[in-house]
Image (cartoon, rainbow, N blue to C red; front, top):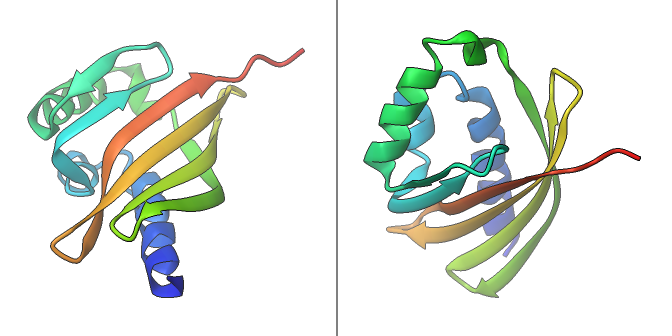
Length: 121
């Protein structure tokens, strides 16, 4: 399992590093991915994520950068894992981020990314 955890850690790092690279980021996703962002917008499928991400990177959103802090990985099956993360946004927002990852042809890919804003007291 340690090699799988290392591979999942790499996906988490790559998701952060590729946040402004449409092709690179969407390459981390399954074809049928579901992505729910900070605002509750739900995207379905890699192609929709590509389209919306490309549009967003042509707006001031291109300057919004995030850091992902991996908290834990739980294996539901040998080929399915939950990753619990904290998303730190450069505008002082924080989100609880969950990835569901599946092992696809030996490669871990994100099948679900769900961000829930964390309200600071």
